[in-house]
Amino acid sequence: MLIQTVLGPIQPDAVTGPVLPHEHLALDLRTEADAGGMLSGRHAAAVAAELADARERADLSLVIDQTCRGMGRDPDTLQTIAADSGVPVVASTGWYYQRFHPEGEPGPDLDAATELLLTDLRVGIDGTDVCAGLIGEIGTHGPAPTSAERTSLRAAGRASARTGAPIATHAHLGIGALGQLDVLADSGADLARVCVGHQDLIDDVDQHARIADAGAYLAFDTVGKESYQGDDVRVRMLLALLEQGLGAHLLLSNDISRHSYLRSEGGQGYAHVLCPFADRLRAAGVDGATLTMLYRDNALRWLTGSEDIGPAAALRIGVRS
Image (tube, rainbow, N blue to C red; front, side):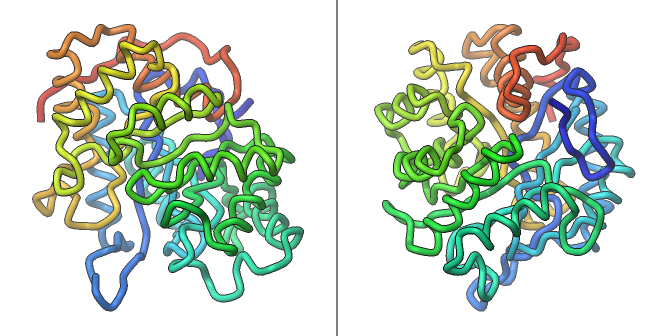
């Protein structure tokens, strides 16, 4: 199965190095209480420079931008960043948690909501010919989805079943993950194509194991956000999951979601999970084959649904910042 990027489809074996499965390259989540939740076109050059640097230092080979409907999605800027950085970028569709749903969306009509997603996946997003390659980040904000969030999940499951597109979720602070899987499964989604977000923010070994046992992926996707969780805790949880034999269900990313996280503004940047965090994993005894699985192979299986993802290059990860 081809991977749909903002500059056109690519073969999985073109992705020779690490994948960042949950990032934001352009978004707008500003509120009255938080004016910093954005990455606009004026940050595009800095974003592209960071991705190009990560490509050079760590062989970064693909970035998934999980900015969906109502999150300030900007396909033109994504195309510019992909072209300028030399790193393929995947765009997304779907709905974040209810606070950020556009007016009238997803609405009470499940068929109409599903059609909106299918248009983004098959025709193009926001009136362009840039097609989404991911349904995500589909959001819930509590232990159980609201009615609107349930419709969003159900439409995501149906659209994925009809197109084969992968799904990524936002489980706020890691909470509500199992309920998301229940709704998606009931809607026809193949859970082997679902990644549940923010599981590095909840220290719940049982929940992590149940997600993996369901066949889904769990994302440690806020690596470097020390104000939410220390990376030392993330390493401990990740090593425990590897010990349980669940490493094939893990995805790693940074979730850069505001301009202050950019390295040019003093933040950790997009390369944090690829370089200093990978160094920590290696120092903790994680071998090269396991790093390849964590940084490339798992993401490609999730994106394509195939075990035949082609050979990996020697991953240049663990280069210190």
